[in-house]
Figure 1 (cartoon, rainbow, N blue to C red):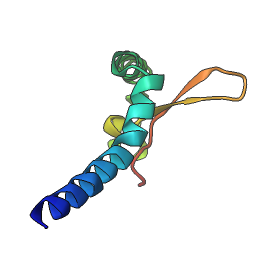
Figure 2 (cartoon, rainbow, N blue to C red):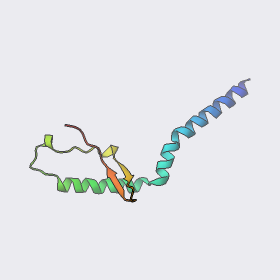
Figure 3 (cartoon, one colour):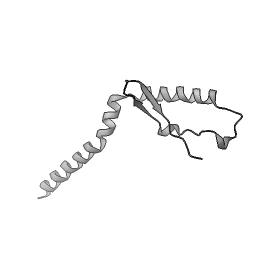
Figure 4 (cartoon, rainbow, N blue to C red):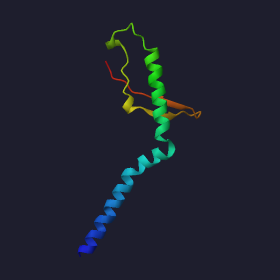
Length: 87
């Protein structure tokens, strides 16, 4: 009886673990983390070089770099999406 319960719990746990990690595995297979990091760093540099320093801080966009992601357009080009805080 104990072996049967252990087997059922093991199968259930492995199924949940596999299904929970599936989206992460698909994402990692499509885009290596290093490429995303390099793209974000490049975008940060561009943002800080081109920010309008004459505007008050309240009027400037505040990017949330940690929540950004890469998207692919219909034409196959990569697009970096960076959310910002609402004012």
